[in-house]
Image 1: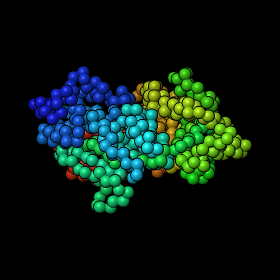
Image 2: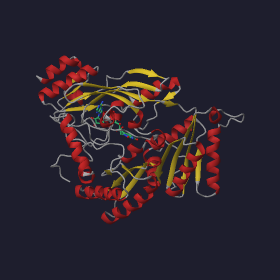
Image 3: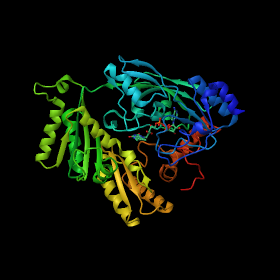
Image 4: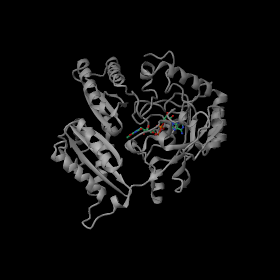
Length: 473
Ligand SMILES: Cc1cc2nc3c(=O)[nH]c(=O)nc-3n(C[C@H](O)[C@H](O)[C@H](O)COP(=O)(O)OP(=O)(O)OC[C@H]3O[C@@H](n4cnc5c(N)ncnc54)[C@H](O)[C@@H]3O)c2cc1C
């Protein structure tokens, strides 16, 4: 009955059941699977709203889904109606004068990158899953990625939203304004809410001038303190034009070389602290090739690295000489999720600490983990420029109690350093216990009140983000 009504909304071809739901019924990590009632693929905002009204009337759980690349188990619910936004994939308006774009929730991030390029503009959010992740999903998780240190995360890049509320109303917050103090900031409430408060159907997003040249290098430094000095020196010299500053330790390089022998690692696998650094320049004085073929922005980077090599605060460096070499450097970094998940059992974390506390975090976490499990191994990949670490632990044995104790060690260290146990991937199901243990209780109670007020039947992505009072710690 419910599905018959849903078919009248979308047309029968766009309500998928049985084996046709396979690609939606398991997340990217393979760690979370479910048996949804059906997957609906509405064509527009009105159809999304009609489906949500139907779900509200029938008390059916709704799970919005974009590219299904999330890493927190947030898209899986047995018996839910999954609403895929994939057909809302139109770029409604590209406005170079106001440096903004209106995109449907189903626009794939890489497609948005391609669409803005001819105007000399770019939408700067980027990460390894850009070929599948969708605008609605990146907003719902407040995604970050590699360019946050220069441009901010999704919240910083969004001007306006269109939302279908849990009762099926359409809320128009499609502002193209940089200043709007008209009451509570509902836009920011929906960004990062992981589909628990409503469905994002479209957004107004900021664009930035596309760099005319990039200077990209792999750099080995003695330790993370030197890495931070390199970052600060580069920021000073370039007026804050560092786009990416990514840390990969020796363990990562070694594992990558085993998994991807086809990739040529410019600095090999022998250094403890490897940094991928990228500076982007827009001014012609920095981007125009000189008579000898050199590009000024690359020369600045080479000069700084040369000085630091002499001072022995840099041990080794390889500067990309072509687009192809730059692409390889990025491929090395963007294999991180594949590398991390290629070994099990694992305990995966996504934490943030102040920039000068990254090394302290690693030292403290390693020391405490060694006391708990002498056979535990770890691997880190970090958006070092914004203090975000993907710290993966490989326990010596597959033991649920041991893995929980490891999560708590990470949480303890993070809270001692006044960091966050959740930096950019969201809470979903995977961090509900951390939420219950670590989130300020007053903040948690307020979140529960907001959820109850907006979604009284609790149909929107139930069991995600906010732990029930009864959930185990
Ligand atoms: C290889 C790889 C690399 C990654 N690197 C990064 C990284 O560097 N930085 C980073 O932040 N993330 C990263 N991720 C995680 C992931 O890509 C992001 O979380 C992404 O934002 C999810 O987008 P999606 O469209 O796939 O969302 P989904 O996985 O489909 O959904 C994620 C959450 O958003 C909700 N949702 C989806 N669409 C909507 C909507 N329209 N309205 C309301 N709620 C919605 C879902 O219900 C779910 O709670 C990576 C993932 C992979 C696989």
